[in-house]
Amino acid sequence: MDYTNLNNACPKDSFPLQRIDQIVNSTTGQWMLLFLDAFSGCHQIPMTPVDKEKTAFITPHELYCYKVMPFGLKNVDATYQRLMTKIFRPLVGRTVEVYIDDIVVKSKIREYHTHHLQEVFHLLRRYDMKLNPSKCAFGISAGKFLGFMVTYRGIEVSLEQIKVVMGAPAPRNKKELQCFTDKLVALGRFIARFTDKIATLLPGAKESRCDWVDG
Image 1 (cartoon, helix red, strand yellow):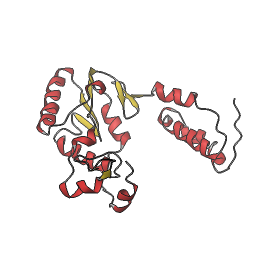
Image 2 (tube, helix red, strand yellow):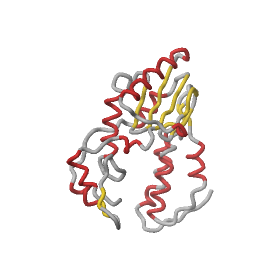
Image 3 (cartoon, rainbow, N blue to C red):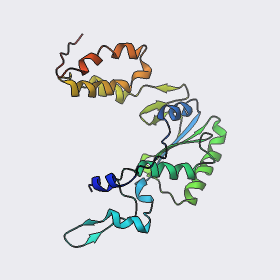
Image 4 (tube, rainbow, N blue to C red):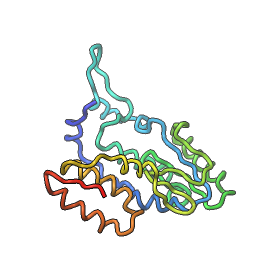
């Protein structure tokens, strides 16, 4: 569905999303981790009666509208984050971190992990939230969270991110160079003096054409 016109007409929801770096940092140094993923998260949030008709669409047979929040609306992320913050408010920052539909349960002491899980599942049942089992990981000491590998030792570079950079073709113009530098930024925290090194690429981003030399 194309909700461009509806999005343009709707005011922006200013509910803040948490900073990814802060969430990731607070997830390290844990002996036990549990990664949860909500099942079609947006579709678990019902639309208010007055807003249902705004999502209407035409088919060859009938006029329909969404009963639940559809993907494509510009305030989806803010709305979902508000819900998750409300659900897990007693636990966020202590044993739970949430970023939209990504949830991690963390335990510094292994023996407390079961109790932390009970607290989380109690809240999920209370608000009738469904999970996607195929995307959940139980009882592990390391895992990928928001694009980073979090472990007891700290944050480690993701091999997938390295492969993306190593497999990227040589940029031929400004747009491709900007795309390439965006990929490098994801690895910036793992590279000493990264800002100085990437600065050599930035002048080329101002030109319509760039010359790439291997070496």
